[in-house]
Image (tube, rainbow, N blue to C red; front, side):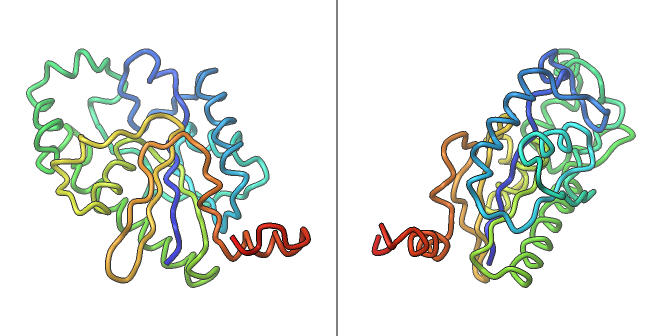
Length: 224
């Protein structure tokens, strides 16, 4: 099966001020734009078969800055969790709510007021990534790489599922702004290759592509 790179959007104005953005149209701040550009320096070394993004502006901007030549596909499966009445409120204020410890310790039971259940968010995100992974594999082969730009909780839920963890443990996973987490799905189980990574991604290039490039360049390194 193909390999998916889960890219979190760059830092936003809400991240900087400590507010829960949810599905509000918050933009990247200057730091976030630089983070997106640096992520692009790493991603552009990869032969990406597909680029998918959450519909929210912070993800679409991240993709535009990171991969300006790409034609991303917007998919609602990867949008942020619907935090309902919590959206736009300071995190320090939300931490005083009765629901807060449920979100942190028993998120599978958390349903946001006039919003989405965290379990529903996890279900749609995992279904979305598996659907896309199967599609990319069918169209481009099992060595294909593809990227989806999404949000912290969404990425953590996908990684938790790949690790075989219950959703109640997903808060143990970190997905910082502009970080990349990598999962390779197989018919028997997923393999989590990287989590919250901000380092070089060139080792993810399929060996067949590396050998082909080496042959074009005169064969140097083709036997590695």
